[in-house]
Length: 395
Image (cartoon, rainbow, N blue to C red):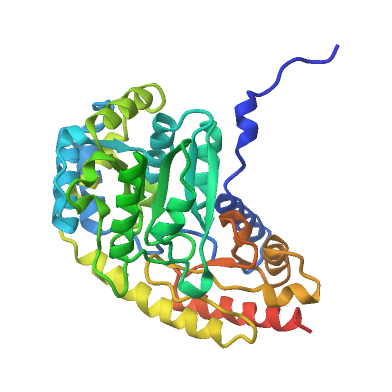
């Protein structure tokens, strides 16, 4: 008799994260003995600063290993609000804050409590891979707004407004952008805020890379007068403090939003890890010099990577203004047998043992994402291989 067992249909609406798949493929090759250069990982290669690690150790020694409040400790929520005020000039209170298990969890929670089946969510292209899948999982409809490589993938308020319909519920902005490194000018961001307020639409700002800007000052749209009414912030300590494995993120927004996430979170995670919360408090309240040191190193790496990529005949790239990604256009190889960005990434890994993420994962098909959150030595080795690969596949 044929089994009637099966998975829930909603699982079929999402796919495995492309960035996680690249990491798994690279790790498999390493185990097999290959000399892999990994440009796929979206995490700092820096260790967590010592003061933060010591705070985690102290939490264990003090037996701070029990449940906490679902939304995180009051001390951590206050530290998040205080740091956001210091960095961006906002004015949130602990009642408008909830701690999550990483920034991705913050985004997932926000989409699940804001988006009903059939609601439309406006997402600029290229986009971070998870946006599409969490909207699909909620039963929403993704409305993609294509941006132009020539302009540095900058989104304009007029582009957003053209895509708003009576079904629009949410606009998602990620600046600095993963994968392009593009930064939305403050003036345009404020115009987008005005558009969303005019149409009664939520505006989610993903601030994962907000401290890593190379030319501009860090900015949060939530600092604009009146923004708190329809702005929700998804934040993370992962990149800013090299704490990816600690899994600490947060949401800042209206109390009703925080209350909704609290209900959802109470049934899926209970609470963020107690030990990680203590480490996060130290990260937010302790010395901040590590952030500037990482930013300076990322800028040097960015300049090196962009110069090397632009020296490869046929390759173009918009200058990344933030985050730690380069997003070169490699369509020059499509004339010589490579079909698309996924095919490019697969052949590059198989032939040269260089791991990159195909642009297809981010909604474009002519690009690959290169993470330069790795050493100059690895960048030089990987770019040598990439240049050789492209030269071979242009012939």
